[in-house]
Image (cartoon, rainbow, N blue to C red; front, side, top):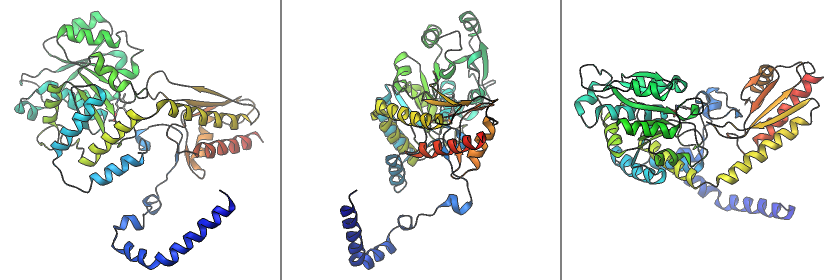
Length: 407
Ligand SMILES: *Cc1c(COP(=O)(O)O)cnc(C)c1O
């Protein structure tokens, strides 16, 4: 900004302040308190905030929502409406965006898995809804088939319905495991490359045996096309997190898929009680926030975003490489959290520093910074969840600590 322009701005501000001062103060007194004084609760309660160089981690509160999403949440919180109606209307819009028959906003991908399976088990039978998670003697099916390589902690979401998870490795084992007890065939996208049965084969085996298929793609956008890829492929249910790359509310996710199953799943969801999903409540603010986040994500210029991530990653790399003995490598995971990551490493004999110590020093510094994976002679980071400009702060802190370790 030119000095002249700056001066003009300053004098206008003074003028406005002078004339408008008392009036705007009077307005301020009647305006909602939040617009006038914004409390810094983190400061007030002594909660550490930090620059997130790690990614979308639940323990680190996931992601930060864009302003449009925050606006939707704030506006949504100021009116009453029927919870079912907001889910109906938002569900229709989401379904169109992701090429599915139907969709419902859940309290996360984990809840989407539980509720989707609940829908498969109960159908529209309200008595069965109240019986879950006790399956014996109810006539409900009780087993989910999953590839051994796809068995991760989040499979608890399946077990919460009372179902047993049966592990298989090959197509032959799968076909042998299918029985009248089989409710669902579950697929985990993040480990897709580790299983012996691929996506398409999984779907076609499900169709062949008349068993619904579900896929967990919780952390699998970008690419944005994954939002519809698995619906197009023929999975009956697709579960995704809302608060990871889409930067919707952290306590939201989406269950998408067959209309009849989603209708049934909603019997196990609020506002209805007496069901396993009553504690997995999402209110209108989160439903609306999820919708706006998804819409924004679908319309985002992902190429530009990627370029921005690359540029900022390269900036950090260049700065830390200015310290003698430091080398960097950029890598992109093939499945899950597909964003550029930077590994910063050093010769452990030349630099008396281990990754964990460096990470601790950054965590305890000002501002606090949380890095990604650490190894004895390296640390990793991603600019994915950083605010614009934070990459410079992170790079400066790294350079500072690396230089200190050298001397
Ligand atoms: C994050 C994650 C979940 C859980 O998602 P929430 O939205 O936090 O409920 C489930 N499965 C996988 C593979 C994940 O990465």
